[in-house]
Length: 138
Image 1 (spheres, rainbow, N blue to C red):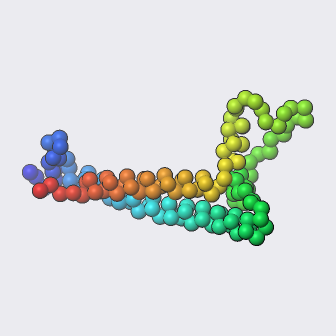
Image 2 (image 1 turned 135 degrees about the vertical axis):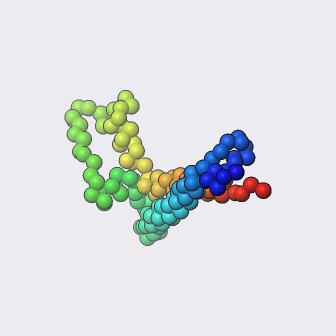
Image 3 (image 1 turned 135 degrees about the horizontal axis):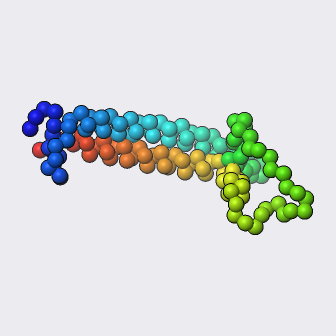
């Protein structure tokens, strides 16, 4: 076996060593970046949930914090939708605007916890790929 190639135990094909090294590096980067992003996302979700719980304890009233409010605090305003007075507020059909409004009404904390779970999944996948490509054949 040459120094630039290595036998893959399962398929018996030659795989260049530098491709394995790049794969390990990218998997390690994914693992670390996804974990850092997940920790930041969990901290932000905890901050939102902590603010809601504190407000609930002090005022005995739960204040919802939807995604639309978080975006407006970040100065990402959604365009105003004007509705004719004779038209119902909620259309009966499922159109793009209805789905967009539904998404923006989701709780920001719950959405952030879901995003953190996906990021942790990416981190686990990166760790698995890293482990798979760094194991040495005996």
